[in-house]
Image (cartoon, rainbow, N blue to C red; front, side):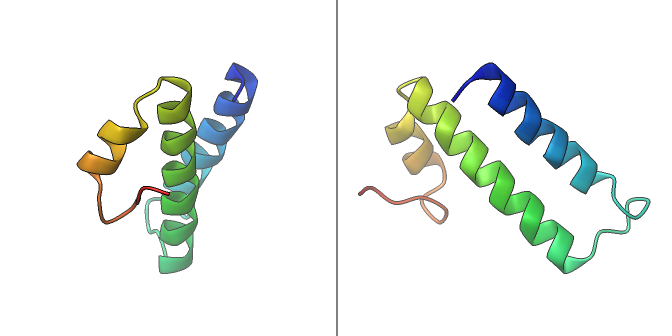
Length: 64
């Protein structure tokens, strides 16, 4: 994942986090969570920290 890709995902997250003047509906929350989970997983892979991420969030990620 390139830095530009990370930047674009972070921009998406920021837009969702402040959508509707902090009155986030459930659909927006789910979108934000999905983008964040995928971004963190990609960064963990790039940093060789996938195992740590899985241990930290076993309810979100599982080993393949």
